[in-house]
View 1 (cartoon, rainbow, N blue to C red):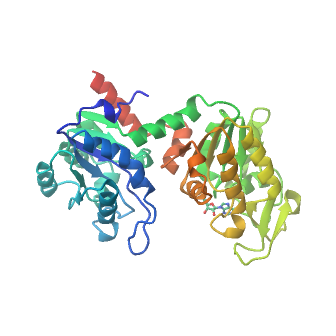
View 2: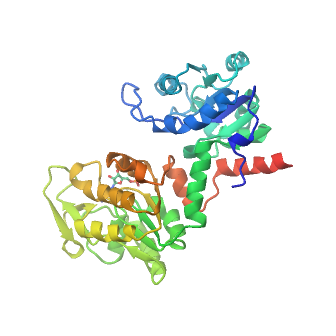
View 3: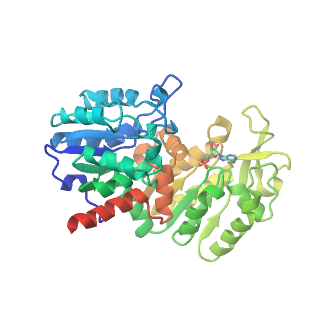
Length: 400
Ligand code: AMP
């Protein structure tokens, strides 16, 4: 990968700005409910500390809409991070400005300072040039380890790289890019992609791109019903995007003779979307016209699992049913387990699929769990991601 790595840069005594993705889920009281994203950033943070850098961490958290809002303060993250690295992490009052500058001037080698939420400034998401110019002089070295934000051209992920001398990727970023590249550029075959989730419209780009790469495409979840309807099946009250039927039919035709494009053949249907509702396993031709299909059925689980078993490369994004409700979660968990028992190189991305893999207790059997749902999909679409492009450009510049 033509991107400079953090371990190729001299960090001793340098002010090292690391763009991390600390956008962690919190409960109503502000307690962090899942610290995976913090944990995943630790290798780069520890490396920078041990190399003698003065470590500045910057992230967004939630959607404060460009205003300072204590609800979106990174204070709970500073606390959790302190515990995880066993060393006090200070929290700066802001991410730019004289106060922050002074705090940085007083830092010692190996010390860590977390800057306050980047999105307290509307200029961050606007990729504002002046904001980028205010961030850049805070540091000597810029490191991007926020894979989850790499598909966004924001000041901290893209803009400020133009005004720093040295830029490189952190270990998490490198791991993400190398794993996804393996599926994008040189996948071992058979290559099986499993797509689920609510809508076809969200995944148009990735489906189109995967059609020219995969051996088999397995589609489940809400999005399957638009495809089934396009095939002339009466799907009752199941989720259908009527404006995507033409496109879905076109995709099915394009796949003919090239890609094995499999849709569910049976379903867990219910009178309505409710755990208490009457439900039944039905085959495609027997879907009651006033019921909704909320999960793939046992025959589909078997069919999909067989494809998964013979795969050498697997990519999965999106749940195969309304897995948040126990009666409709079997399909998603069964697929998570099937992927875990396969010996293929497997990538799981997207918050729901990652949650399912964790809940099924099979996370360690997955080759790569992507921290960026949106970013990993865009990567697999073959799109150029602004944060990665910025690092590549910088690397070229640094080579002269
Ligand atoms: P996405 O964000 O597009 O990956 O979609 C995830 C959502 O899709 C989850 O909240 C699931 O509950 C939902 N979903 C999965 N299968 C179905 C289905 N058959 N009908 C309606 N929603 C579904």
